[in-house]
Image (cartoon, rainbow, N blue to C red):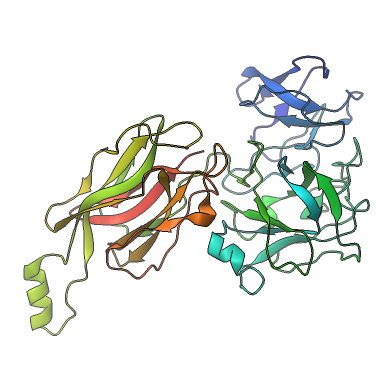
Length: 432
């Protein structure tokens, strides 16, 4: 077995006429809780597989017809992670054990769909535009005829894949087409068909699954893109997969409690985290920057060394209260503390009114040499329009060597990293 990995055991009946409550039991501590089930196929006999979609944050029930909504399979008597990876869902630990099943949906999409691609990291708008000629590592590709692949909804057995043990299970697969499996080895290994697409009238629903251990490293975030035809270089919409759906975009996060999008800098100083308050989002940073200690610079130049590099001496978040749909700021930006040392000249880098920090470019030495914020305005209610992000002037040195981003369409809610006499490391805390 897989040791003391948690799993979810579900008991109950399904009905689309009212709330459906299932008992979720954590086998490690015996705690139980009830969760809303957004879609459950008709109950099966004990020992068989049921297909469910759980969303603790959304009380909406029966939002989709039979066979359209898939999160994965949970056996009536599930085994532990590592025994049969096709029989239940369990969030992986840091070692990547377990199998994840994801539903892919976009209720606002209309038109023809020919291709879906999943990339191993978040793609910026620039990445999307350069997708056809770029060198991003493609880890999964689907391009098949509708009705004979993952585009179909094949009913209760759609997500069932039988394999003798976890070593015999393929590394990935498609809902509704268990015979196809591709390895996440950087090669697009997909079945291609001449049929170019399927007409959707408002609902796009399909699914995929993979074993995180089959990937060289855990995917902290990924991008799922679609296009209407192979001759269309534009990807008209972006989908993200997660276990939490908001109806317009989904994110793929194998670790259900993700850290920030990444930090830049060195390992000196002490850890810090400065968060905005509840209901606030990050709209800028304030602090000081300079060329370092003038005495040290003189010594370096005297002995033939390089002059001191510019560094961020101190930094703190600028936060603003916002409406839930991000349509407008509810007040003026306020400072939420600073970290680092003194000296240098002050800076105040803030987004245009109505926009929020979604990423940054960082210049990296052993400390943080520069920060250039990326700001995005509101798009549809509750999501940010990252495609129209604004790049603020750099604070400090401008090389743009690193580009950490928050998950697609979500704002930052604070900063984190390491600091001492200056800012050794900088990163973003993201919503979600």
